[in-house]
Length: 287
Image (tube, rainbow, N blue to C red):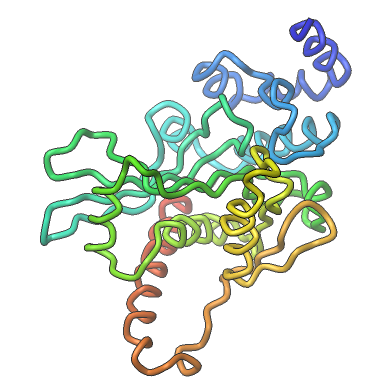
């Protein structure tokens, strides 16, 4: 019955789905990487809770139209075939830990955005894949859905961080980047991507609209989503999301206690370097 229902949903928007399947990026890359070519229909809460079927179709089409038009073949191969496009790398001289941020095709097993910015840490004797410290997942969403005047806007659907089984990797991160956060590193990378493409704002899902939200986890989601967006200077909208102007808000150093200014300045230099590296990485693949 589920298969029949999905087939009917495909046919209901058959023109949009024919266009989606005809896009080179979908036919030549996405469909080869995963067999669920209609994951926006398979997942009721694609991008956010409460979306209508029409909104889901419009958003997935907006995303892949944008990817098709904006980027060259080398970008598409890197993101969809070769494990991701490297945005930033750093090796800590003291202990040899390596840190990397990549832009990747998001897992099709979840509905939380079509692209993922993933930060990984790899021990000196570790494997090639490394340990994920943070993921920030997003799509190029239909602007009307996000309550935005622009036709397309970056829409963050997932902000996922610390895992209990990654204690050593997080300790290495703290050693390399004291008093910093991998969540800010990933957002700095997204900011660089957005600015490379001319965006002056991003939209980010409200906690209660997040695809995996449950009442039992409400407090955790509020901190991880609404709390983080507010820290970045975000403003809640009447829709399902927050609006975050770029560059994201930074409290003036002059308003901080003098003993904290040096650490804050160092944090910001890391974020600035990551944003600039990501901007340049994307700019090389514009078409």
